[in-house]
Length: 60
Image (cartoon, rainbow, N blue to C red):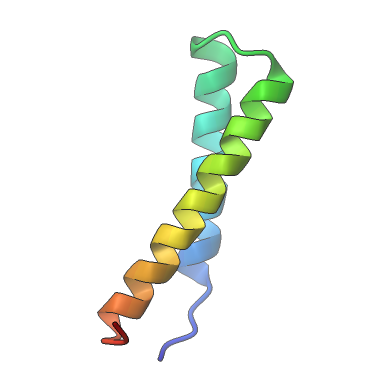
């Protein structure tokens, strides 16, 4: 099992930043809502990166 946390942190930061900015600027949500949506997206991205890493290591 490889315990590389860099892909997980990268996916969290990128998902949070992109989703928060899109929700705030383009979708017209207030910033509290945008940050909450970005936080949810970052949790989903972290889970996806973790499952992808486990699957790549053959730990189904």
